[in-house]
Length: 367
Image 1: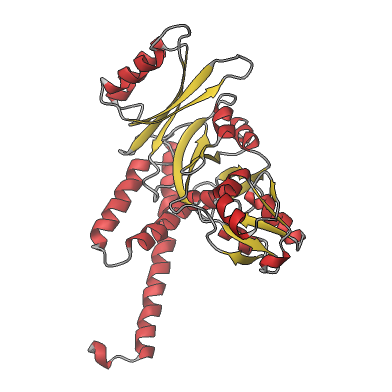
Image 2: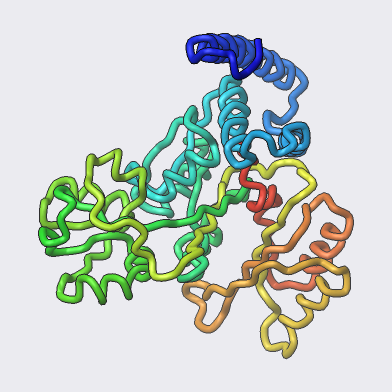
């Protein structure tokens, strides 16, 4: 029948048939995933193959020919792939809580809805849970495009024996929320220190006489707002639903393009995906001029791209620092391995923190 002769009931009937077919194929896919999980267990292979998943996304996007919206397609198949993999074994993920923080939101985006999420009171606690193997993974913020590094995360890498397994870049939009949705009811604005800083100009302009209250997470601020009608919170979209709050103003961040980078930590880094990053922790030889320049030369002479460098003081050792480096490539790449071996020999302290898929592949997940 020609399209112009079809009726709405006929088209809806066809949609129902398509939905039934999709459901049947999803059930078959999850059954195949469980079988693969058993085979991998028998052969002692890693449950997650980032290269394989990247190939799936590339094939689907190519076959799609931009007919179905690409962003939605990635999101749909990310949830399908993650759910199927988690069917092999439920994955527990620790995050900076309480529920509905931006870290929680990043975790759901990365691991999907099917993972088990454990709320922690601090970033330090997330690292501890992973090191003690009470959870398989943790997710922590490491830097913001406006406010810079999250020092508690960097410092925790100096204290705990964990590896970086992945990264995610999450666009951050801050919402001012409260019980009533009326700005006049707000007598205090609570949030984590970074969101308060990212919205300082908006708050100064629109709520100049209202004090701010830094708390340990945006989720905690949302909880406070849910329990007190005179407290406003700067919180995530997930917090609005979780704590039944009303939006006063959306998008109060001072700058567009506000993005936070999150790291996934575990006990073992994944195999190469073909688009990877490696993180290192280095101590420089003391009392030697040009020590940092020597490190940079090791990288530049091998055309290794240095994507980030950050220094942190060593606790209890005055004026001594460790350096966090991110470089493009995987530790199993020969040139990266060569460069890292030289850095290991010439540094006073060397630690490989992990190699993992780059966060500019947002469709990649992990379990």
